[in-house]
Length: 96
Image (tube, rainbow, N blue to C red; front, side, top):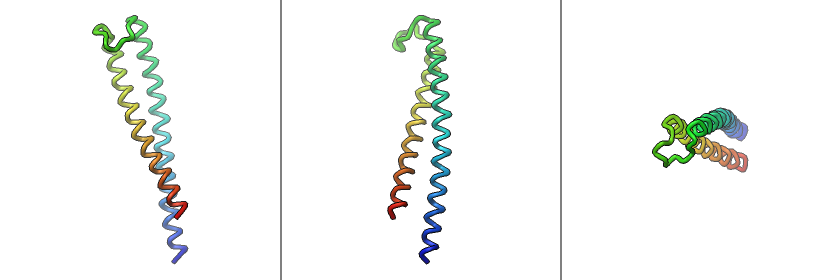
């Protein structure tokens, strides 16, 4: 009976760890994309000599890239929240 309970806990824990690793990899990949987009945005701003996004003459490409970057940042935030929830669940499982 006790061994069975422990086994179930272990499976859940393993699944959570696998998910955590996958999420972590996604965060790393998305973060790399964000860095690349930042470089592209900076290049575009330098080319146009305008870095103020509220300027009407701000380059459209830079504006599109910035929107994509901001979406990726939002996604990273959601994934980080999911990761911290998994970590908390791990702690609770270990203490149980």
